[in-house]
Image 1 (cartoon, rainbow, N blue to C red):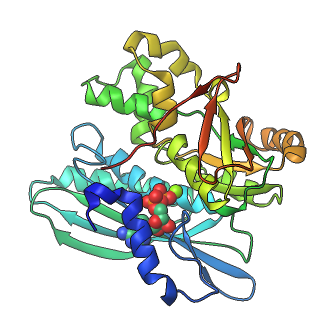
Image 2: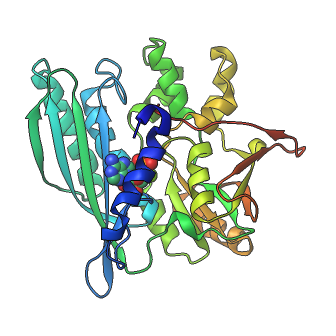
Length: 332
Ligand code: ADP
Ligand code: MG
């Protein structure tokens, strides 16, 4: 397996294939935001792991230690939210190079603890080792949900609406500012905070999961372009997105000209927004949206529809039905 030619998803597909026959039929393994393992007659566990590597996912001097601790747990909780599950505990494996300061480790723990407390996710174990150069953090989170109620990527139906719980592109704008050495200041703070301290949509995921009309769900970590193609592939449908309906924050609308940002690139392939992407039966959309707004004091946004067609493909159109091409984020 040559990672340069098969890429991240090619590698995952290959290992998944090699281990598939070992996976018992009552378990769900590789392929969704979490694996699913039966707990008892009524409940099941969901499990996810995510790795943050210095120089790849963060730079020590563009994120505060508190934000790094918060984000390390947040990106995992986001995958628990994507299943519509409730987190019950976390494990932390960390490789620490010698030059990491005590302040970094204290701040890191403080940020992690803040989010642990918020969603009642205690740290239950892990592993600690030295690293020769880069700080590396792997977090595993276990969650729980009612049996059969976890939302998968594979449940979308022809005609379903595609929705996002929030704005897309703000995190990528924050990363762009950080990489161009912009220090946080009043008008850029918002983007940097969205990038360095994302909020996992646990409560939204739990609420959405209670609705049968929600047919599939995942979190937006790589960018809606790449992530939506996973729902489309798993559901064997084509996704049609109206780029004029991709939810863009007022802050991004106000700032993109100043910084010369390509707003479509940021919102479609920027990634790390950690909003929930879900499909919903068209007939129930307006009723569920009204109830959601009452519950959370904010809307979710409809940006497209699923249809029969080329399974796994995403078609980008604008209000005038003109078609465009965009690519998702790929590590390689
Ligand atoms: P997410 O962005 O939701 O964390 P990924 O795109 O990272 O999901 O991973 C997709 C699927 O592949 C998940 O089910 C994940 O558990 C699995 N996966 C990723 N890397 C590996 C690996 N090295 N070994 C086994 N499974 C993996
Ligand atoms: Mg995910």
